[in-house]
Image 1 (cartoon, rainbow, N blue to C red):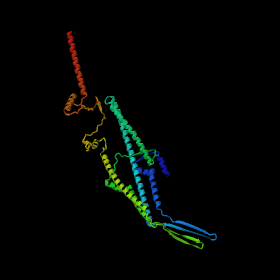
Image 2: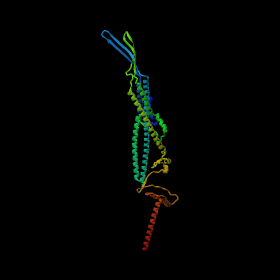
Image 3: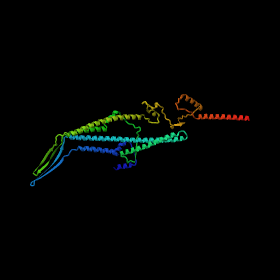
Image 4: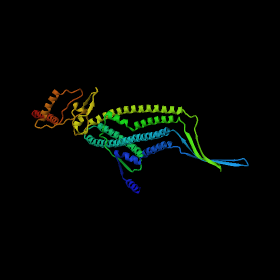
Length: 454
């Protein structure tokens, strides 16, 4: 005991790392709710055993004193008395006790299995909430970096302030979600630790990777066969068996019990001997109709309850099986790496007509490492495509592009294509030079004409 206390005290200041596979072990050691199931089992077993205890013999003593004023007499006798019943009665009592004990154990086992499944599900939910928080925090950091980058580009006039404001609103929504998920996480952790009896632990870390957990899924026939040996199904069958034994017990009580007595009697110092006797209650045959009818009603109730439970379990198992198949298909088709274009192209999507098709058959999926933004100019969205020209005249290249665009691309209403760049600046410079040269020529001609006139 000293070593155990020392080890617990030494580890109390350290982090306790929890995994899903050691939840049951910790529950058996610390959880008060798990211990309550054990106490309930002991209570029910002791109660059933107490009802089958045989009736012990009774020791009786009787003293009688008679006095008429002249002569006095006394009589005293001691005897043992024992109640007897038919052997079948006590056999039915033992069978009912054993069946009731097995039923109690199965019911407790069912409760423990349901409790443990709920605890494990809550453990997985806590880990998933932690993962969601990590993802939200990464998205928040990424959004903040994008906002800082766009603010710098906004100063240079490349992006509008509306885009930055929308991103700030999105960042605020993400921050609100993070605060909400943190509150939910703390509540779930506190509730889980309380049920597990680990409230006094300073720091508890929930570990596990359930985002891509592999699981074994039996076929439907195997799943239904497993249900036949489930604790709840066995408990229902034992309850029906106990009711049948109870009917036999009530029928055995139709034959009454009788009592035998044997002892020693002293009537007078000169007269003593032994006594033997028995007693039989009347009437000799007790029909016990009410108790027998009650037992038969209990049997009918147990049969109906067991039938309904079996049908409900089969229905729930089929629904669960279909749900697991649906989500397993979703997990198998989910892209393993969001940076892999081939994985993304294999993602199934549902068309408006109900048909399912891979994304790769509808679009070309490729990765582009550039900041995603939406540029606007003159109240219209704008997409900029840049290119460099090697081994050619910029103006001639642009003229060729314009001819190809006008001849091969059919633009919808509201769409326009503009060509801008160094060639545009060259055209503007050529126009300026032409204008200045013409103005200079005009000025020179006017000056010469003025001198000639003079």
